Length: 244
Ligand SMILES: Cc1cc2nc3c(=O)[nH]c(=O)nc-3n(C[C@H](O)[C@H](O)[C@H](O)COP(=O)(O)O)c2cc1C
Image (cartoon, rainbow, N blue to C red; front, side, top):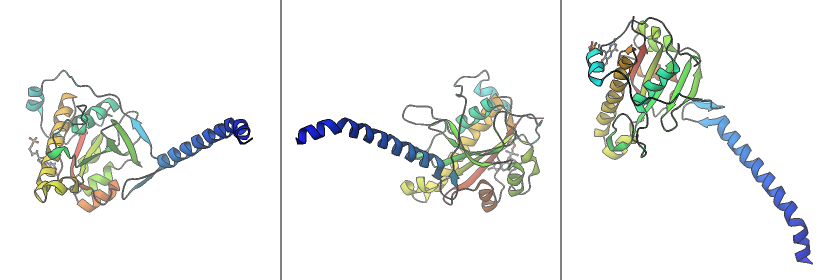
């Protein structure tokens, strides 16, 4: 009797369970997509932008890029392509190996750097602040709007920053490195920002672009512009654009 009862109801119950489980899974993924806690800023409805795949070969030699590099502070005001943005971000922190190693070295492969793009004049990319996601080579929207002038003001009113097409911002979670290396880890983190920024500057030259590493900025003010989580500290700004 009991067997007959289960035998009759089990398929229907099974289908019901599958429907219920799928609905719960869909709801859970919807929730996680709509509310991503990234520390100080809570991104409601996280928007992800897929970047074009980066190139791993180019037409300018490393020697020529080194020879040509200089600090560029005057820009033509022409927009930058999304391909160029993708290439610059990859040069800074892109994944190059199956074991997740990146274009720039990192003490203990602990990767304390977080990279942001303050985009203002990029084709097919609305002005805004974006976080680079190296593992997926994607951008996560942090804030919508043009914040280049705000960041220029926070950078001791270096107004020329706002004329760049976009500003790459290197922030760091020092704890990722100091947890292993103690106070000496701080120097490692700063060295890593230098490695990554130089990659960007040389990549910019190879793309016919230019930029300048900027270290003069107000820590608190610039962190506020980017709405950074409390544990992240900005180390470097790198405005990039087409040289005049
Ligand atoms: C750590 C560091 C911080 C810098 N900060 C600024 C800055 O805030 N503003 C600026 O215009 N240039 C800045 N620069 C760029 C230097 O002024 C520039 O590299 C130097 O004048 C040498 O010129 P070159 O880059 O054309 O070779 C900085 C460079 C470094 C390495």
